[in-house]
Image (cartoon, rainbow, N blue to C red; front, side, top):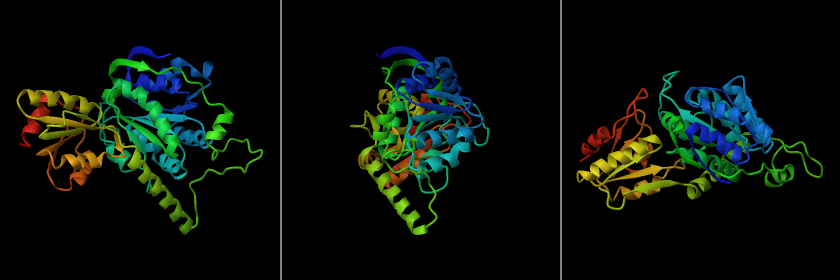
Length: 357
């Protein structure tokens, strides 16, 4: 049955993973996402659902454990924060190249380098543009609430298995650490081995009777064959772009200025929008829920309606590149953000909107 509780975003990720029937979690502690592993350790799902929870010896080990679990068709996930995700990049590229479904959680902190333990959104390039090597894409979900932290676990797994592609929940430290009411989903049973084989005929399960053994790899030594692989990947990514774009619009119908923001900055931007409207400035907000696939087409439509757009990000300006590509020079697009883990006040954003006028 569903349950209404008060908890942190990180804790919601852990509870949702258990309740959606995940088979395994492999991670390593790092601020500000350590509560995911800590909560799983407290829940002890290996005693109730049989879910494996393992603190690996490093981030590199954790992502390779995910590779093994995903290769056997299991619902597996990992989590980390920005420097840890950097360490996982080679493994993430391998997962994408082998077309293995899995869920990755990144609760972003400031950088570059070790940076700060305070919140940031500066991993947009790393996630949306591809931080590892090769032409690959991650399905990227950006939660703006504790409820979405919980909901996107199941959604992330669903999309990952639908397209045989890694999915990532790209959260920031604000959403990971804040506490809100959340409705947790009802407990789902883990898939039986028979159901797993039926749903994932490509998986390496060890049960080969009556069928040809599968080989999971991203290696292809013949250039023409590797090109065919990549062309197949690109065709898959095109299907994802056509079918899986998600976004939220608030007060956009009559908007003369548009804020584009994701995660915690969308929440702060919404308050700035309300303040601006009280003073007679018609501001709307568009929140990308999928950072990839990005809602380029809907943003392009607004380019013929509004007088200017503000890319609101907790970084030096990353998503603004995709917004500018979408509007194709038709209107003015500016960036507002704070760095070093400083979260802006809504009044600062209103001032930035006025500079667009």
